[in-house]
Image (cartoon, rainbow, N blue to C red; front, side):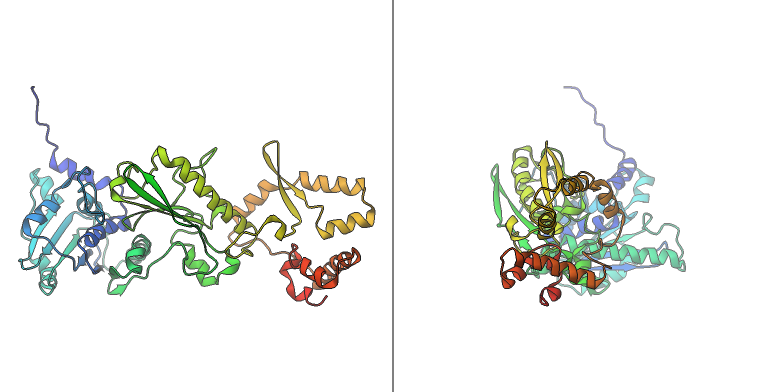
Length: 492
């Protein structure tokens, strides 16, 4: 068979590898994957501001690499995604170190020290590769790497990844540029938030401590697992080929059950709406921080306010990477068709519970009561396949009016129908989406004496219907909106 060798041009290909789509946070997370795979107990990130000479280093105390191992690790595409890997291995394509680094800098220096071996060093200088148009991996780190060599010499084992010529971060900026310096500091905060989320399980179990400029990162657990009002489904194992994935749903407490600080923290780096949905983990490393994964029946679910409290944990083994269509950046996942229906079914139950807690302001704690537990002024009904809202004729305030006017009151029936048929649902949703604060609570701004009179009127109606005073008070405590005012109920 005749053929030609069509080798890619190094200068062109290496520039293309810079455009995989990383940002600074996801690029650094990819480097940390290697540190965790090397069983590092500590990872130190150092961000040094110096204008366009700023640099970033990631140092770990993992097992390190021998010289031939380092050369192989620096080779683009050093491993096939089809190779069998250790269950704790967070890599797949053999590209992460290179593509993540190239996306942020033009010069990548790696120094590594294995047990009982000398320090090995290799450098990718993209300008040097482009000039010579050959895959020339430099060996001498040069004098500028002296502080890195000194640091690694003092360690038993470890690896340092050093980024310089940060053209994607500090290109052409001056050291004294305060705006640029502030932007650099903001990037550090974004990295901190991303790593706290991505590696929270590793940090929580103490398997690794991540430091940024000598300050340890606190983990961000998206499931608020320490809170007593957080609802958890049982963990469900879903068989898939020769592998098993694990599903567990969480419904977070309503804002009314959280302190202001708890609510702010639970919102996450990108806010409540962004962080609802599935959290996909591989080897306990977070890949997808909240997404509905194009699931849903009959149509795909979108992120909406009423599902803010729904968060679902999915744990994948790394042998299912191809089936889940994980990309090089480890930031997207797509469920295999064979389990989509099961995932949708399990997720819908979590979404339904989250909607109920959201709608009823968290009064239920960790359970959803039966419908009869609460008497509400409005009911949700389905009519011709569409959702509609009716005024509850069994609500004491409504029943008392019917009793006063007579059981058959066409005028009152007509009024209630007008109200029911003109509920401004779209306007309510628009207002909720546009405003930054919660809607006004029941009777907010209403004269207290008027409210007291309304509750007294409902109480008198129940007593006149033959219900004892103690029972009447208990019933009012389970009737909206009177249940919000226990102090007034106590006066009855």
